[in-house]
View (tube, one colour):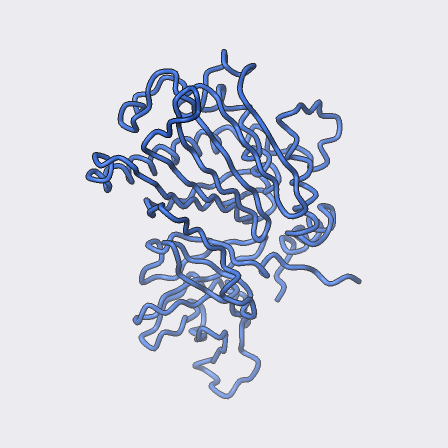
Length: 350
């Protein structure tokens, strides 16, 4: 039988760092539950959220003064390496739980298997861009459906109301997509729809909205570069937004989006208002993504194979992305991976 290529061989962001305080928190990744906690010194711990004694959720326990996580049922204690001890039977062996590597970076908590090198954690830093914020949004749909939605902008005039273009401009928008062995690259350009934010970001009537992104699979993420130019494309407006979006599969029916916001501000007045601009840009992108999150449950049962669908030119990246999901991310077919998720849902496994 072929060995499973667990997605935990990649670092995934699973929680905003500020949401992990003095109490443990449960997170989900690919059908498994994990308990995260902080010690008094700020050190992070992450273990499978299931006490090996009677399977009680460790995330419902408490963090002891010595930094160990205590089970809420019988008080078993676990350190960051997963080594466990029973207070009632201190000499009892085989009390350990599977531990994960937990790292805090870019305002988020990331987890991976313990043997994954730290240099494989994705780098979202880009020259000239400053961090503006981080937020999470849950999508009630499988990973492939969430990815499909974020692989095309054709839906923009109907699902979104702020960024992008109006329906009347859809036939004349500029579009390009390239499929590569390890990624897809997409570019859209169209006339920016009227928006109250236009003047604030230095956008003028008739300016063009640009959205360019690259989707990768180690883990699944798309990095969107949003900018505006004059109609000729020669004059860059003073604000550019960069949104690396990580799509973390929680289980077969839900996907957690962890969105990092970066901004490049080329005008002095924008730099003077940096905190306000950062908050405004983060709020803007969050509203846009929430528009998608509200709509996507309507198509949550979209089949992975897309059989019977009448796809168009804007859907070029979708089929290739599905192939890369299977080959690079899951390391197995969609059917095999779905079967593994069903097995996990049926009962505990370690």
